Image (cartoon, rainbow, N blue to C red; front, side, top):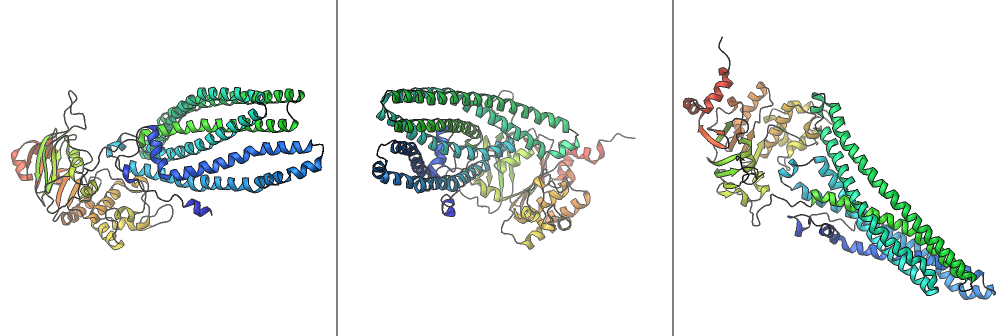
Length: 617
């Protein structure tokens, strides 16, 4: 029975109609984006909630009938007359109520909570993972993850609570008022006054609780972002002995969160005190009028016995509903905060008719490329890449050199389409990279960066990332080519896994910089893409390992178009052609010998690295 309900929501794919754009930015649109996918489940909750509320409403009526029976002059005749009704109500309480409560619980706890929460989390993660690289550069990873996790809970809970609260307000409030009006209109006076006051009460408190909740949620996410930032950069914290500074950095956000929580709790205290006073007035007022009407002989003890439990139940229900309503808006505040991350449209989309990149020769052309990170129109802003044109022939090995900030890495990022050019175009075998799918583009390019991070998975899984279908033998062959096999065999993690099954740690923290770079090289060797990009790929290696890897790279580069970026010029001196960049432009190009003979910018860099910067004896 449980499994049947648990499997009602088992499709967690991104909906096709919004897979590209993601959830809408409006609050109602954001809610409906997720609710409509399982709207039949929420409708079932409406039905089960209605059934529970109706059964609970009949309990005070049952008590009233019992009191009426006990005050009858002819008890035997009264019992005989009321027996069918009493048996029916007993069965309703003994069988009917547990049954509808079970159904309500199964729909809510077995279907909605696990299924809907998973659906929202998965689709939110799916959307965020496909955001541009710039999206992640502008926020804390911890805060993004916190919003993905918390928004799912809050959205689901606010919808579920709204359904339950609406039914209880409608069924209890209106039905109770109708019963009292039908019995004696004067009994309904406290209820009418209470309903009016309750509306004013909600009108005052709910928006304030919502706003305070949003502020508190933002403060909580800020704490999470700072804490994760400290943990993920723990080596830097330790190296610079800045533990106390990190304490102060995190403590500042924690103190801010404490103030926001205190403001929130202060409002909740006022909320509960006001509601308690209103409920007390309702109960005392109804009891007073009931006694007065009973003394006048206008109502029977049975009606009093029905009215007072009904009012007491409404008072308890009102507290629960009010708490649910405050919880609803507290969750709405969390959802609003989460929307700042989840309702952001993807900025780097494939073109509507994008096709797969077809790589036949691996020829690359940069034609009049200009790029300034979106700030090209601002006064005084110089572009990072400025009207750059460059032709790299198929199978050519090109080295790119230049001072830091010359635009070398930006050029590679544009080739990979982490950013779109602001003018000009980039072609691979005559195909504009903006007109092909990003997946196929990056599948055709193997890249090793200077700052290599690994996944917190096994070494084998990290290498296999280059080609998921690769066998263990192919993984080990790639590791040998990258001079990584020997050290991998000696690895052991905290769980006792050894060799290729040992985990690398978060971002590869369990390995040295040189070991991480060799694993990353093995991953690219296994990928065997037709275009190879090396961005300071051997910078973290010692000379002996670098020399061994250079021999392997020679074979790896055979038949590939290669772009190698290096500050250490000796590592790329044997390339077919060297491109010298400065201020986003190509200022020199040629072979190593030709550039030395030119005695220009490259020759100056070479002399400095060859000892020319040393003062004469």
